[in-house]
Amino acid sequence: MSQPLLEARELVKHYGSVEALRGASFSAHPGEVVALIGDNGAGKSTLVKCLSGVEQPDSGSIEVAGKPVTLDSPGAARSHGIETAYQDLAVAPDLDPAANLFLGREIRRGGLLGKLGMLDKPAMRTRAAEQFEKFGVTLQNLDVPIGSLSGGQRQSVAVARSVAWADKLVFMDEPTAALGVVQRERVLDVIRRVRDSGIAVVLISHNMPEVLSVADRVEVLRLGRRVARLRAADATLEDLVGAMTGALSTEDES
Image (cartoon, rainbow, N blue to C red; front, side):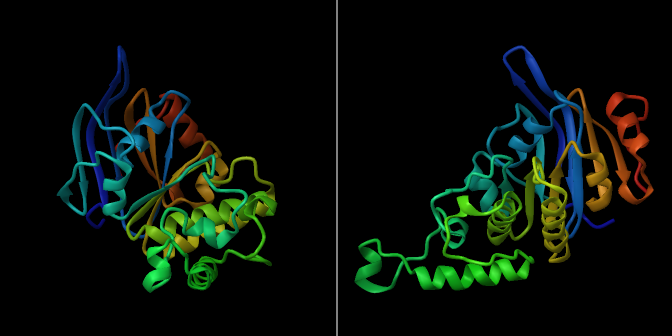
């Protein structure tokens, strides 16, 4: 297998007397969907926070493309091409999809108008439409507030926004939570398109059938450590549950 795009080794993180990560390791490769699974309290959220710059580990190392990095803020992670699509979407419901795509990264108009804070809305709309088309996000109207769209469409916009700025890797935290079957499939298709574009996707999910349907690999955390790495094509639901509960433990990859 190729060199990992993102690799964490032996991360330890304490919150007071609670040891959330106990030497956790993780890796993601270019152009793959790797699922990160584990029971509640396994350390998934803490690991993702450390890898996206929200939290800093007490010890351990993180590498991007084989080079040691310090991800001491979300901005530092973004500077390495790492973005995160959070479960709560973090969208502005009163703004349209294009404005949400450029939220915090707005394009200003040229000259004096730009210096006065005027936005180049036509340019933002054009680039947003290109981004949505690239990843198969179908929106009938780009002028309506995103809050009026369906759950699947809002989630697809949130995913597309993360991917628009991620040139290496994007974390997706429960991207299909509370979605119906059709909407879930739409979001999963976006994830596949992101992977096929060469960007690594880290999928955090409790939905095991969904994991097996979209992931290339699965890494399992239990009690703050990685206890298994599995090829999704060779794994079963029983394998995933066994790894999460401790009945199966393997660090081997074929």
